[in-house]
Length: 74
Image (tube, rainbow, N blue to C red; front, side, top):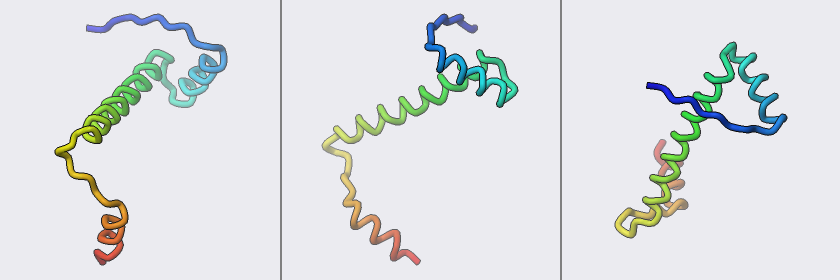
């Protein structure tokens, strides 16, 4: 099932959408679907990271130690 969404966008964003659609040889609707999908994936990742940062039971890594271990792993 699909749903129709109507949104107002500024001229500059509309033109950027047209350029992207032409460059990808896709419809504006397809580019919008791809953009929403990417945004929601990133949004979910940020939500998980934020939740983990607030979890006192989640281990906190010392960046200096991690970097040293990664560089010395040869």
